[in-house]
Amino acid sequence: MVGLALALVAMAAAADAKPKPPPKPPPPRLTLLTGTEQGVLRRDEIKLQVDAKRAKKVTVSARFVVEGYPEDYPFDLGPQRKGIDDGDAVIHFGLSARQHEVLDFAIKSCHGASLAFTAKTEKRTATLQAGLRMPSDC
Image (spheres, rainbow, N blue to C red):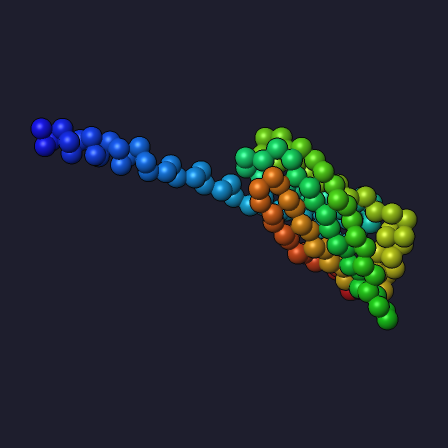
């Protein structure tokens, strides 16, 4: 009789226990596919790969800064939205005529350029800051 009562109490306690929430998906992983200033200028675009597990869509925005004299030239790119197939997506940011012109001047005058990306999926956010490599003759 006592064993039966203990079993009922144990079953009631197990029924009241809350289930553990599912683990959060990992944040997206960002990889810059266009790494040189000349590559960006030649293709007229900046390419970024986003690897995200358990996500269906990604929204990416970027800040493109070209160093110059006497001031830097900042440009906001995006936001670009794309569906994620097989865990990854490639985002293309096209350059405007002004961005192309400023980057061309920066290459000729040996100034650098940098990028800051923010990628948001349904549940997580990731950032990446990267500099574009300058030509070898600078």
